[in-house]
Amino acid sequence: MKLKKPIIAATVTAFMLGGCYNQPGLVQDDSYNRTKTGAATGALAGALIGYNTKGNHSGQRALIGGLIGAAVGGAIGYSMDEQANEIARALGTGVNNDPLAALDPRQDIIVSKHPNYVKIMFRDRMMFASGSSKLQSRAKSKVRKVGQLLANYPQTIVGVAGFTDNDGSYAYNQRLSQKRANTVGNLLAVNGRPYVKGCSYNKAIAPNNSSKNKALNRRVEVYLYADRNRMTDPCR
Image (cartoon, rainbow, N blue to C red; front, side, top):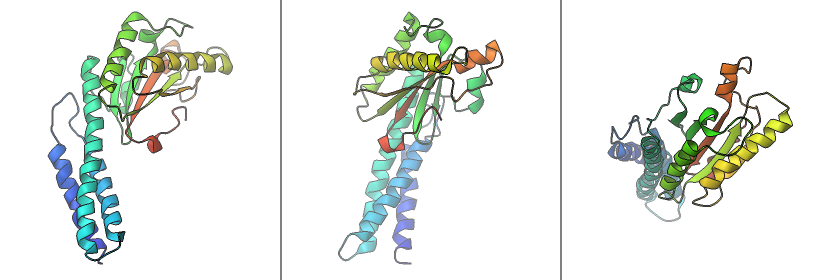
């Protein structure tokens, strides 16, 4: 019971701090869920560390640790929310968290927020000519804008993944998707080399049973993480 009280107090404080960060209307999305999640997670971690630190007044230390953890975690989450909004604005779009957006062929760029990362999906038709890994001029301009913004966030971890349809062998598409991911990664290497991976025709958005669906599957995705340990395999 002694442990429970300071943790509850710290968690409540986290949501209070998360609320302070909740500034709506920057672009299209004002949920700032990463801010709130980061504050809550930081508060709990800080409370546990404070409570387990040797000495008297463990409850007080837990509350102080929770306050510090909430502030740090909330600030990290807020940074990711800000990046998503700034990137969407620079790319001339909004933040779109609708999971069905990827099935809309009219959307060449989709910026979305997820619990552990921000994702930017570039549709293949605006990026590369058929069978090529050389960026077209308009696409190069868009990717460079993302790189310029990332320079303002040196702590962000960047991942890039290329995806193809199933025309041709798996090995051929693996090489092509890797080359395309490398091309985008080279332009985003402002804070160090991004993690780059070619996924061939794994993780298809739609069945590769029509030209329309195959066009949906050809894409490059950029992932922005605040924590390297939260990175996942983009091909799975």
